[in-house]
Image 1 (tube, chains in turn yellow, purple):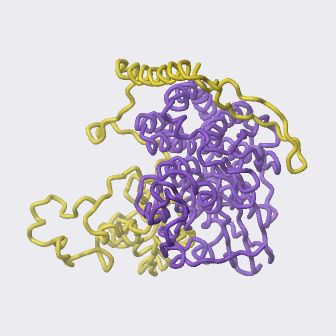
Image 2 (image 1 turned 45 degrees about the horizontal axis):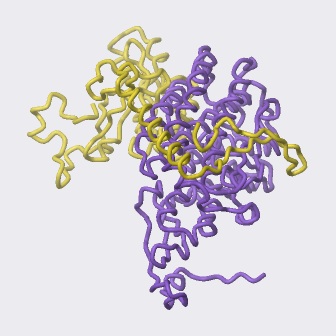
Image 3 (image 1 turned 180 degrees about the vertical axis):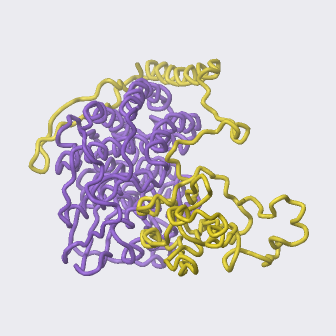
Length: 234
Length: 387
C-alpha cells in the first residue's frame, strides 16, 4: 500500500443533466509525514523494479516477435487487408464483368475500370482493371460492393517500392469475359481467342521504359539479371 | 463580457519585463510542431518568465487534410473511412457516430445484434486507446517501460480487431445499417479470455506506474482545471470528468446497448493531472465491466439491415448527432439537400479541439516541465484537431 490506495474508489450517485449517474470517484492522496512518506516512496520504486525484474527472469513471458526472421511462419487472419487482388478460379479465369460497382464504391478513385465490347461475345467485358495502391486506403468498400465475388483482399503486405508509379497495378490477367462465359465455350482455342493476355505492368499505366533519376526503367538491360524484372511488386 | 481577439503576431510580441523583482525579460519557446508530447504536429508557443509559464498559445493546423470538404464529394458510406482518420484511436466510435447519424436521418432501424457488436467493439477500442495513452504518458514522463507494457497488452486487442475486421488501426467497420463483418463464433470466448487477462493486468499497471512516486509527484496538484472553466471551454470526455463533472453520453443519452448495462462514470475531485490520469484508468475497468455483461448474450440476427451498395438518400435538412469517443464527445452535423446522396456539408465537432484549449487555461503559472504532464493528461490526437 502506497500513498494512494487504489481500491479506495468511492461509488456514489450524482444527479446530472436530469439523470442519476452512478459515479466512481477516483482515489486521492493520503497525507503522510516525512519518514513514512520517504519509506513509501522508496517502496513504490522498488515495487515497480521488482515487477520489471520479474519479467526479465521469466523468458516464458516474452512476447517479442522476430520479424522478418519469422517470415516463413508468419500467419495472417483470414480477413487481413493488405492489398487488393482478383479472385481467379482453378482455370485462371476471373469473375469480373466490369459492372463498375467497385469503382463507384471506392471513396478516393483508386480503382479505374476500362471496359470493352467483346469482339467474339459481343458483350461488355473488362479490358483493364487498374488499382492504384498509392492512393488506396484498404477500406474494403470495393470487396463489399462487388456482387460477383470477383475481388478479395490478399495478405501480401510487403509492398514497398522505390517509385510510386510501381504501385499502379493491373489486376486482371487477361482482358476478356468472365469465367461463366468462358466455360460455356468448349473449344479451348476459341476460349483463348476471347482473351487478351495482360501483365501487372503493361499498357499506359506503369513505368515501361520511363526512367527516374535514381530508378532505372523497367525492362532496361540491367534488369534482365533479375528473373522477373518487375522489382518487389511481382 | 467582452472578448478581445488577438492575432498570433500580436501574441508573439515580447512584452516588457515584469514588475516583480524576480521576473526577468519574458521570452518565447516553441514546443513543437515536432515534439514528443504533441503526439503529432502541434505547435505550442509558450511565453516564459524564467521557467514559469505565462501563456500557452496552441497553433494547430499542421495536419489539416480537409476531411470535411472531402466528405462533400462522397456518400455517407464512404465518409466512414475518413472518420477513421480523425481520431485513429477511436476509429470504431467515430464510424459509429456517422452511422448513427445516417441511420437517424434516413430512418434505418438496426437490430440487437448489430448494436451489441458495436458496443463491444467500441469498448474494446476505448480500452485500447486508453492503454496507448497510458503507455505514452509514461514515456512522456520518462518511464519507457510503461510504453512497452501497454503495447504488449494493446497488441492482444489489436489482434482481435485484425482477426474480426482485418485492420488494426483504420478499421472502417461500423457502417450505416450494420457492421462490415460478422464476428466469428469464437469471438466471445476470445473476449472472455481477454477480460480474464486484463483484470489482473490493471493492478500491474497500478504497481508499475500509478504507484510510482515520481509519476505521482509530476501529476499531483498539477494543472488544475476547475469544472466551470472546463465546461466553458467545451471540454468533454476524461478531461471534463477529471474535473468532477459526470458528463458521459453513454449515461446521459444512452445509445447502442449502454442503456442495458451497469457501469459507473469515473470522475475526479480536483481536476488536476492525477484525476485525469486515474479517471482513464478507472474507465478501462468500467469498459471491462461493460464488455463482461454484453459478451455472453450477443443476440442472433443479421449484421446488416441494408445492402452495402444500397443508395442511402438522406432527406433534406440539417441533422446532428453525437457520440462518446475515448476522448470526449464527437459531434457530427450533416446538411443534406435531399437530392444527392452526398452530404451537402459535414462538420465534425471534435473533442480534441476543445480539450486542446484547456492547456491555455491550466498551464499559466506552472513550470515548463509541467506542460509535459498537462499535455499528456489531456491526451490529444492532433489529426482530429486539424481534420
